[in-house]
Amino acid sequence: MLYKDLVILVCDKDNGETSFMVALDKNTGEEAWRTARTVRASWSTPLLVDAHGRAELITSGHQLVTSYDPRTGKELWRTEGLEANVATTVAGHGMAFVSAGWPHKITYAVKDPTLSIQTGV
View 1 (cartoon, helix red, strand yellow):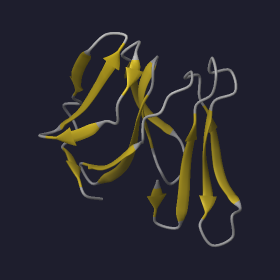
View 2 (cartoon, rainbow, N blue to C red):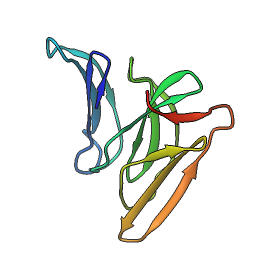
View 3 (cartoon, one colour):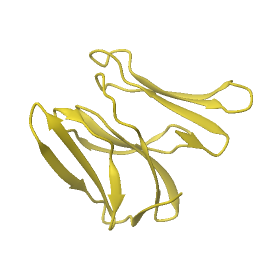
View 4 (cartoon, rainbow, N blue to C red):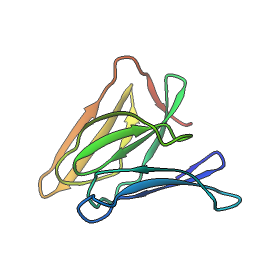
């Protein structure tokens, strides 16, 4: 994920004990920030949204759906995950939609009443 001068990578691995997210300066490759995660291996691309005037990076994983500040890596909010292999999150109408297709099919929407999520940061 590219955000301003940062390349942000979500590195969810194995059972989650060594999972993390990292931001690298796109010009120098230097690490800008790193955030530990407890999410086991996943393949979902993070979603960058403008949420009521602030940028949020929403990640969907097996155990958790989590939002981060892309400038700092600080967690903004979290909710339970789908307990399945997840697809990439999409957003619209003030909600983030998360879905999974295996081993069971499930989709749900996450809404924070204080935010107006709109794509296109």
